[in-house]
Image: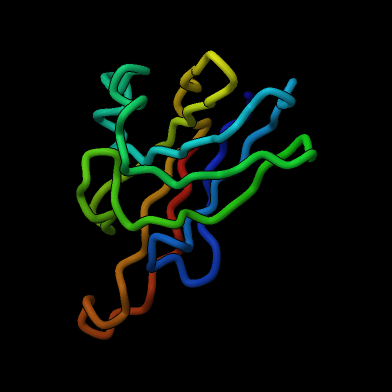
Amino acid sequence: MEKVTLSLQGDGYKYNNINISFDVKNGQSVTEYRVFMLPKDKADSFKLEDAISNPNSTRIYPNNLSNVSQALSIPVDAFGNQLDSSTEYVAKVLTLAKGTSSLSNTSNNSVQLNKSPDNNNNEAPQDPQINQ
């Protein structure tokens, strides 16, 4: 798996506005991908052993395409904390295949949710932050 990339879609306020995409190689034996959102400062310490039995992931089932792109389906990070606008996030993808598993490198970029308009005292919404 290559080029794990995050982007914000729509208004960028909610977890399902975060989109993950990555390129797939040799996906024939893959049974499932699991996307883990991680606070940027904790990404390096999140290893394969942490991912294997962790339920806090967006599950993606393989198709025949060479690129996967999907919105997150759960509102929490890998540690069970709600995704929020005060934290910068990166992603790692666990690939489960017949008899083997592997964890991707950290995503190429990070994202940070926008503050919801109801929580920022009528300030204009900020542009979504996507950091390379």
